[in-house]
Amino acid sequence: MTVEYNESTFSSKMIAEYEKIAEEKMITVSDNSQILVLHTKAQGKDKSKFKLVVIPGWGSIVLGWDEFLMKAKDYFDIYYLETREKKSSKLAKKSKCTLDRMSSDLKEVPEILKLNPKETVFFSSSFGAVLNADALNKKKVDPFLTILVGPMSKIDMPFPFRYLLYIVPSFLYHPFAPIGRFWVKKYKSEDEVQAAKYYRVMEEADPKKWKKFLTRFAFKKFWDTYAGIESRVLVIDESEDKLHRTIVTNKIASLIKNSEIVDLKTNKFTHSAGIADFINNKLSEH
Image (cartoon, rainbow, N blue to C red; front, side, top):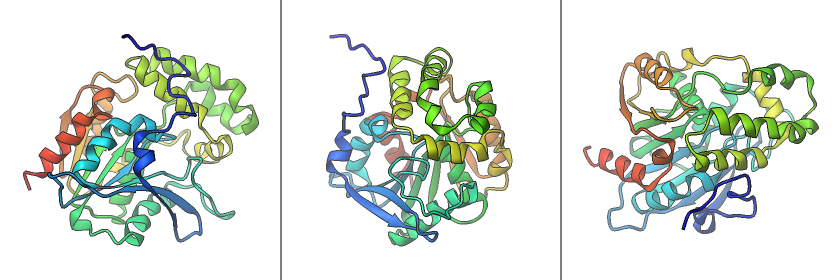
């Protein structure tokens, strides 16, 4: 049977299988904001000693990572951290909307959860990789291994939106959403599955939070965020993905002294059970 993917494929009414089994933890960090973490303990016979901290991309939804998470849970204790631009976060009134504050969450949450850095692997994607890199660069975290999937040098968005962010009120987000969906489908998706996931991200967006954070990052380039990292990093290229360009990924890897780069080709694979096996096999070498 052929399945068609469109705006309704990843409906907001759908719940990921991982969400059904994970324990929800609201972690209060130093600025009194609360960050949601989804946690599962490994039960499989091939259980690893490593704990996996997952830091998804901008607005990324659990449903988009479901296949990966459902396989990875057999190997690792998982801590899926929802970054503070997402709906799930509860921000303190005076919380800052800076890269430094967001990357501090990556330091504080594992500390509160009492994770041993020597047995911790950070797995981050897209904008999550930027936050991860900032935490590494500033020596906030030092995990056994960091995996950056499709790291970005800037936040990608249609050119006029970079300026409209500053003048258009957040309540007009949804009337402009069809333009974003067209741009994603035509220019930034490798297939209809990926496009449908991005549609869901836009559907679940918190316009006030997005405006608050994006006005900080709309014109920012993150090259310096990767330079100076000394920790061991595995960079994952997605050479067939339209959103994460190989030329950018290669440059980012070249800026990190102790890095290795592997091309896993597609965004579909890096969100699949296959990458969970790949990570487990990689760690079994140590």
